[in-house]
Length: 247
Image 1 (cartoon, rainbow, N blue to C red):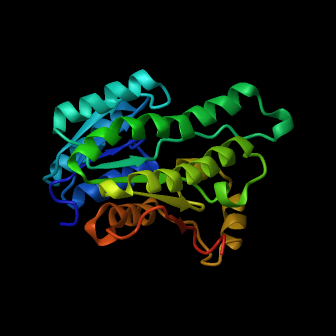
Image 2: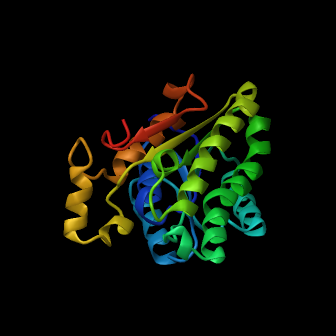
């Protein structure tokens, strides 16, 4: 197993991409801290599913955009598992609108969750990782942070900021054997994209060279690789998983 003996904290992992990453890592022998904000039932269900596969997972409720809650989360993970080897910063929200109509609250809420939440969790796991001289930090950014997207100035700004954060931190901690990388998903079939009408999904697929939306599992496979020793010479990189959309 690629991640045997490791402990991962996956933020926003009760559903979607985060859920797929948590499950994929558990299947590779990793113990998983499942973070959620509102959906306790789904978080506990994921932990039970991982348990049925012979793995170990525990649910942790926390809003990572708030320092005190993020600290309680990381302290709880360390108390329960004894260590944190892998952090997947996946928690994110959207509040889409054209800038002329975008409220300050929607601007600030997206940046707090999608960018400040990453700062909070990453800062809190760094000392344990530095002490053990091993760590993997994987940031889930977006192709929107690379190309921009109308109606997503807040989301794209946060995700572009996360790309800069990833590269800067990678240079800071490389000497401590902590690798920091990002994954930039394109259009992935999740609850968010399911809200699109069928015609909208078909239009999206037509713009993608591979002709389809991606699956959460296709993001999870890359996350597992980046967390493993097989990616031991990769840091500061943003891997785009988008079916060729941005090439």
